[in-house]
Length: 207
Image (tube, rainbow, N blue to C red):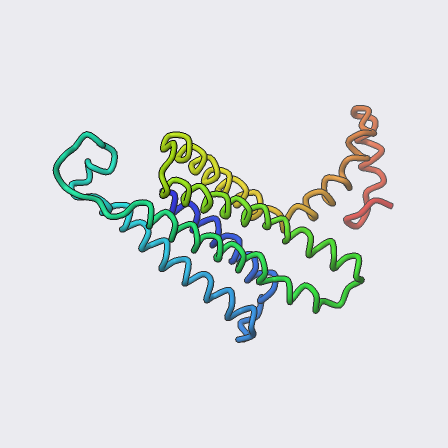
């Protein structure tokens, strides 16, 4: 489920990129880059699903450490490789829109603001890196229970921050809409206020 969930989060972010930065089907760099990252992640996470499903034979050995029969592939190596690919993928998604943003015809202050919104995704890169760090610590021994708990914590943090980052592009519009509605909501004083508002409404806007 981890592979499927993370792929869907990254896919939602990349499709937003496609809609914002490559609305036409022109074969420019950002369009090709988004497609490359999408299909790379699709292939990788699909492979990850099968690796997780058939990691041990019999499958019971995956969770039953007391089972003497059967065998498992090297879990530590798989965790480390997974962590490396996730981190690289996160940085690729983070950097994809930056070139396009800095080519936009807008004031420098606004460019910095838009770029900063997308750079919040750096938090996802940090969580991926920490997950990789604890995967390496887990592979090198030590307190297994402590290290795997911390690795699991950063996995959930990575998923949570990924969901937040996928919502970031729409936040400015959300706050703008809420900000426009707050004055009328704050000034509401019952049916009389509604009647006055209805009398002032004309041609789709207040006069």
